[in-house]
Image (cartoon, rainbow, N blue to C red; front, side, top):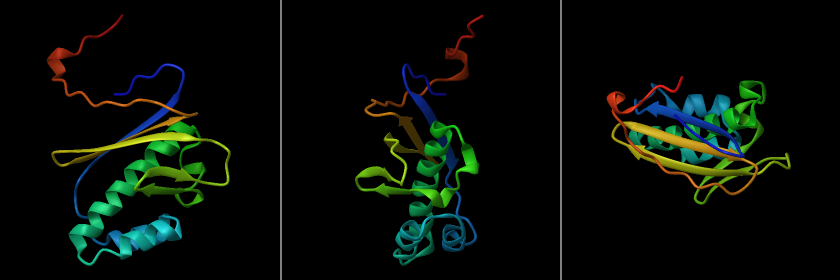
Length: 130
């Protein structure tokens, strides 16, 4: 769950599973620079880690942007170090990424600076507002 005031935000959470061929998927859907980063890793486990780091950031940006997959995963480039988005658009994004247990978590806020934090809660701790 994500809560924001004054920003369009997007969040993506992915379970870390090893795709059959992270590089094949990256070549098909990522920008060339991102696919090259996945390719630069020598073993499948490292390729999968980089793949999911990039994938979650891209999904969070697409959700914050509001256009979803209509924009295309290869229409912009995310950088992992430092976290950044490059595109021909004038839009700016604040990004954050975490790895908790077997999950990659990424958040994006469109429009500038934002502070992110992750808090864990049990379902019994959440309340429904009516």
